[in-house]
Image (tube, rainbow, N blue to C red):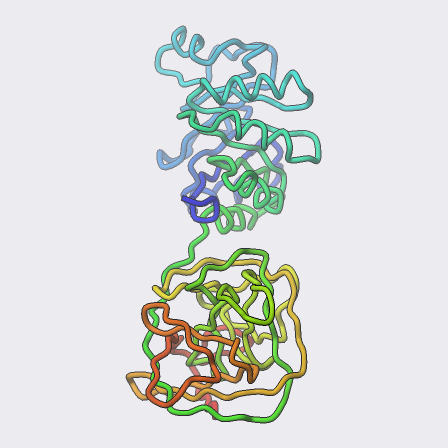
Length: 373
């Protein structure tokens, strides 16, 4: 399973939560975080059984009483091997915590992830190379890795390192709301879409105007593109430029999408106009079988071109329209991932589309009266 699709564990660090302690704990428990970490056993008392209570030992000596802790994080150099500690204290689980600051601690981290059931890591330097090395060292090992971060942005980067990332993220929250943001990036959901077969009713030349090519930061598949349409209630699956062209090289990251006022799906629920997309934005890549994934926009190329309008109808009678560049290399997908050159479409041809089913206001679904002609 890819890094983007794998759900990771969320851990919350209370060691610097300060005055937000109660609020962030309630938020994490509500979101079903796997663990809450503290350096004082008293901070773990009273937590519900749905969350693991983790005690991080910060001093040089192990405490005689770990309170209600389910797991104790130790420095294997100062405190000893977690397996030996667990053998000496029946009923208490131990795991390594390593702060990577130099070559020696990096080597220690690589050793622990290859042998321990769980390793918690903190990286001090602003480079992701040490994390890459540790993840490579852990490849094939059965243990889990949790990395400590100070921000959700840092967490989102960790999750993609080596296309694998750690198995969990331990966040030091800056305040309420951070736990929710962490859950959003560690539990990405991109559910399948219900695609319908649309029947083409006509195509027509419609002058010139600005059209947008959406260049993503990902390789797109031959049966993959983005949904585009003139009306928010009906979109057509425009295929990526992954099929041969006689006069130019393929652009496997690009979708020649349509006129700038067209809607596209930026997420499973959210629409955007093509002209609103910017570098760093997200669009929803969709396959012919309905599978989806978010991809990052690298740029949007807007240029004046001749335009072609494609009219179609859904099985339930809903009218769908798509305006694209008037050129045969602009393509849409049909059932079974059949590729259609847009200029060669004719009445009766079948193409794939999606019917979001609700009106839109600033991209959000809303139930209100709205006629799109």
